[in-house]
Image 1: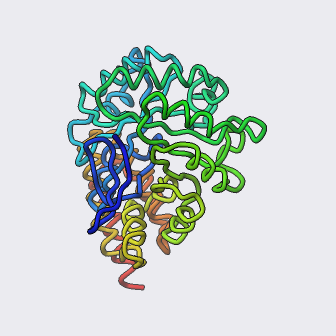
Image 2: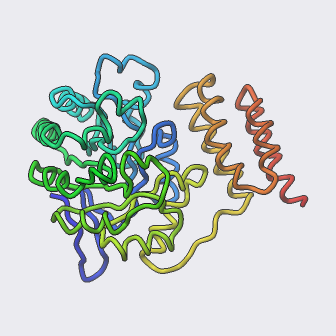
Image 3: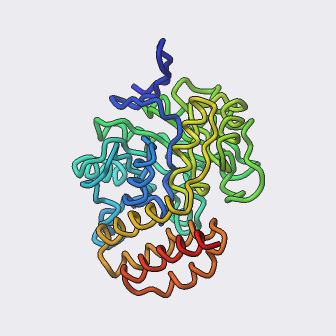
Length: 335
């Protein structure tokens, strides 16, 4: 059973047998929240982090991308795996297989707005078929002994908002936690997030509800919790290049103290560790290329980082990548 409860000492948030005071979850983001990134967020203090989306089609699991997403062996915390698909039995089979591989929580994706996902009637496209939603969540819950969670949007469009209905279907099927992104599929990532609509979803069920969408800082998280009454928040794009952000937000929600971003000398160590982890996980060829993306997001946020980013993107091995990161620190200290 998932619940959020308050003891005499500290507020705890629980998902099945897993409990922690952390109410901030690192969102599943394809191409972002791979295992090295999740582990890096954990080292800053994050407890909850959801994996990149894994296809439920086991016929595609032979690809390099899927093999890495299915590797739960070096997870430095709770292995919370998100699955995408539209066929109930296929999703149930994929859930069982991931549990056998080490997954401790299974999340079902009904929130992704990407065309390549929605064109296969998966992701947020499922919200248009509530009968199918019920079949999917029931099949997955019955297939595994671990907690099952669900991530959704408000609906397909402003004319087809049905998140509260979907939430009740999920709760009745045994889903233990619901995350709601406060936009419809038609909105994609544009326009304002409707936190009042998330509040309505929260009021419609008794299971914990997590608010998601445009939560970029600690103050924003505090406001969203106040408006929605949700049990926690999920941080997505704001964490790109700032793996310390989710933990800093959570600490603020607990003690009201704002934390500054790390100094450049600290970021140098962070990036070096991240590059090493990426090379260890993906190998040298993919490690170089995937590091460009992650390091680039961080360099975008550092004065003078644009030039270093261009140089970093041309580096063909880890030694050159480390050298450029060290140069970043030297230039900043000399300024």
